[in-house]
Structures are given as C-alpha cells and as structure tokens.
Length: 194
Image (cartoon, rainbow, N blue to C red; front, side, top):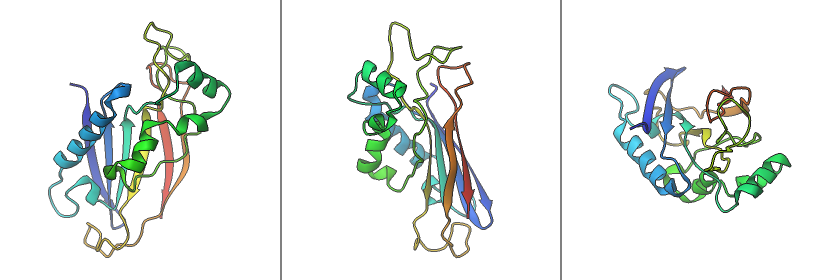
C-alpha cells in the first residue's frame, strides 16, 4: 500500500536529469524484495516524448528516499556502541546497501557520499533516542541519496545533443537530527554539476 516510487525528469543545459524517490519494503530480511521492487520501479516508470524513456537512460539520475536497507550481522548493543563511540565505519561494512552496490548489477554505477552521520532510523517520535519500544529495532541508514551519471561513450545525450561528461560533486550529505516528528531523521545533500 505505501511502498513504490515516483519520478520526475527535466532538461538542464542540454542534459536529461531524472529524480527518483522510492519507499522500499522494510525489515532486515527484505533486501532481495527491495532489489526486486527497485527493478520493477525501473521497468514500469517510462517517460513519453523525446529524450530518455527509461529512468536509467537519463544523463544523471538521483535516487533517494526511505530505501529501508539495514545493518546486518551486528547486534543492537554493538550498533549503539559504534554510534556512541563514533565508529561508524564499522557499521558501513555491514550496511546492506553498501554490500549490494558490489553484488547487484542493477546498482552498478550508483554512487553515494560517505555516511558521516549517525543512522537515521529508528527513533522514538518526539526524541533523539533510538527505539525504546518492545521491538527495539536496530538503528540503520534507511534514508539515502544516491546518484548515477550515464557512462561516457554512450552516444548522444537523450536530449539529442552530443554528450559531454557530467561531473557531479557532492558538497554535503547530512542528517537533520533536530527534526523529531517522525521515527526517521531526514537527510539532505548538496551537489554541484558541471
């Protein structure tokens, strides 16, 4: 009912850009279902008119939302210890999305800035405390922002002009811990395109 994706595209300075927001299935054991849902979203969302028809046909794709990937292997106490002692790099290694980028062909070419902020899920609403309910869900970086630049040598841009390689530089990637109206903390990124 509340899972899926929505996309919008635009042309900017001769390049076709696509923004894809997704809410993928939750829970630790649903990683394969998340991959299947992402593939379905990519295959079903087609654009009409001139230019790129599929999402990945665009010169640049931003993929973001509640992607719901979790941290595997470590127990709740270790995850909280790593967060409290600023040892986030230990958690990156077991982050499902980071692992999937190396093994799922559908994610080839997607990039993400470093996760230099604490996991953005699961908080007690109205607080900055991780889940204290009976479920005691492990914190995770469920809310993400990734991008993919079309590979060079892929021919003309979908806009019809000869493609010049886009350069994407991420200037910031952060969470907003001050917001407490949800069990998630929003994330934001700032990019420069050349």
